[in-house]
Amino acid sequence: MSSTIEALFPKQQGAADSVVTALNHQEIVVALSALVADQRVAVLHMLYPRTDARTHQSLDTLVSTLHGHGLHEVATLVSQEAHYLVFKDPAKAWKAFQEIRHDSLAIGVHLYYKGLSGDDAEKSLDADAHQKADTPVRHY
Image 1: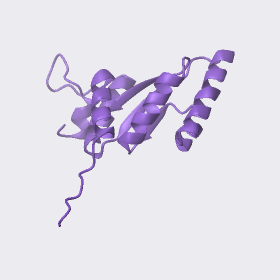
Image 2 (image 1 turned 90 degrees about the horizontal axis):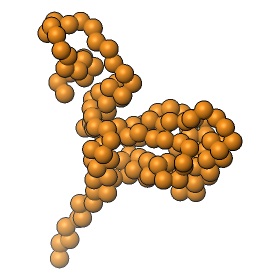
Image 3 (image 1 turned 90 degrees about the vertical axis):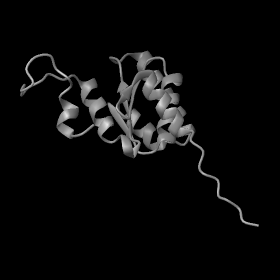
Image 4 (image 1 turned 120 degrees about the vertical axis):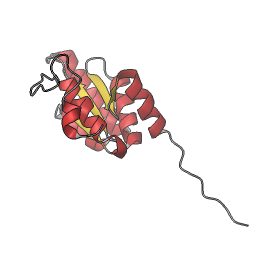
């Protein structure tokens, strides 16, 4: 990605001198994640359905589960129904993503990472979250 403005103007059909484009939220989040790819920032887009008793029960259970795994900040933001969660730590992003995706039937989540979404973002985040730290060389 060569510039911020290019990230917001996806390849368009028509004139090369076009000065306007239409974007949806996914294109904006993908562009944002591409711009901060070198910082390994993950964005989780949370999908809270219209509230009913099952949604509240699922939300409460998810918040409790997140607290139980030590993801207190994430739990607080989810309890407040934050729409986007932005992580600087791939390992914590991966853990939160997995908990949200697997522990809640009523709440959905989409992952954006390094300008990717869907399975590609998931694979890239998984690799970074589980990257082994270089082991120090011992001198004898």
